[in-house]
Length: 120
Image (tube, rainbow, N blue to C red; front, side, top):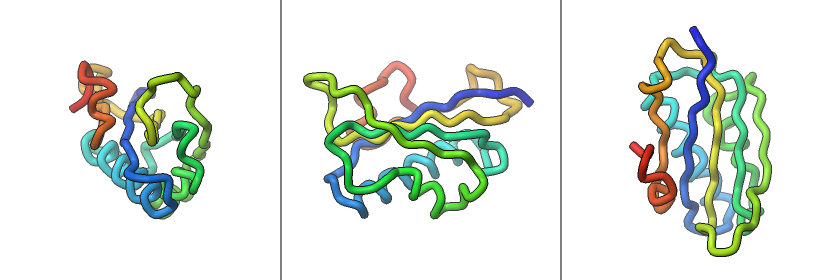
């Protein structure tokens, strides 16, 4: 096993609690599925949100889907003029046997346009 970082992002429909939780849960679930991970494989997850999202912490969505013992933290992205609005990002540190080249980074909804070079 080695430690790898997995990136991902999702654009949220609106700054509403349910919308943030749904998008964050979708993102975490997709990252886990595409990389054949379980919560026991996850060391920690850093979530960030663009400054226009304030209605809920995305980490709550991870807790609701089983990340009870995983350290999670949330932060605000830098407010870059012209940046895509309403985006939740994550960087998960995981233990896996996969080589770096086999890690699948996940960009969903409008956020797929952020990293066309690595989005699956």
